[in-house]
Length: 375
Ligand SMILES: Nc1ncnc2c1ncn2[C@@H]1O[C@H](COP(=O)(O)OP(=O)(O)OP(=O)(O)O)[C@@H](O)[C@H]1O
Ligand SMILES: [Mg+2]
Image (cartoon, rainbow, N blue to C red; front, top):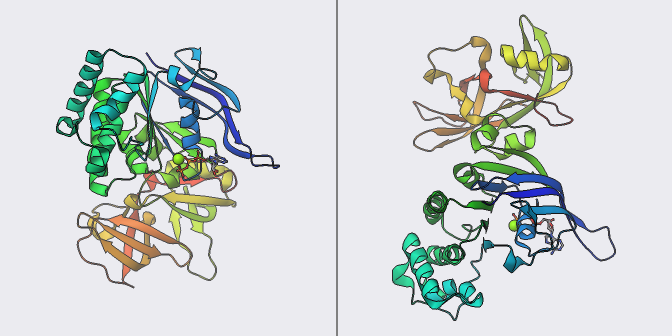
């Protein structure tokens, strides 16, 4: 069992005379036993600081961290039964792969046979048995990463902590290590907390994802819940590539449903009818400022849609088209806002082509422009 409970956790780094840097701003978070929890967010949002406080490498300013009901604030890092894998691997250059993996166990005075068994088992899991005699400098980046993971596995910790472990690898290696770590999680059935700023890693690996910003938690949810039901504009814009399009504008009444009209100068803004659901949600905002959000993948080229509501269409001009093979990214402009559509296209698009689009209004969102919360 290893359930990690974080209560009202604060970290303020002193900065000389000033009030200090508030890196973590009183967060509450529960990581369930055997859960793979991803902490994600932009650079500087407090991910590493949170992880380092769990590991005991950073002093806690206030609040509480407990593992299985035992408060560990004042427990030494070595006694927390936690293993951490760092971005830079932190391998000892003068030691062989075997010794790097065995080092922590030797320090803890494990019997030789036990150490040998654990190192060989971990090497087998990670497919690095042929490398055990080599020094780190004779390994590729991906192999070094495996050794760093192996060093954590041999400890049989209650909780694994990963701080951007794949960011030094090339794109292909990242994808393959990503699946290996996911498999490892399934195999070891242990609690893992994984920090990344890569939202694709977060979506593909996490049982749940914690999205952070400026030391605060924006939302904690399962990947598809975050994607389909973001709580606010930050999460909506952070999860998904390319990100959700946002349009600032106003709502008015138009027949049965509300109509969104984007803010514009001159006569270039677009108008679109909202779905029944969105009209209900938007009712308190009639004649007020609002933000309309729609994901690039919920916008289609009209030529590829057989059945659509003419009130949910929009004509714009192509600024740039990026054919990806399976789909095309269209960079478009309404005259007042730039936006992106991911379309299944039948033809190539040229710059300045006029294109008619259908918006899936059942998947669109409205946000309060002041609180940035979803309606
Ligand atoms: N030792 C330190 N002294 C002072 N400020 C620090 C220290 N370490 C981190 N910070 C500040 O705390 C904030 C959070 O840093 P942290 O390293 O936790 O961010 P992060 O989310 O891990 O970012 P990244 O994705 O860049 O690794 C940042 O504003 C950072 O500048
Ligand atoms: Mg970091």
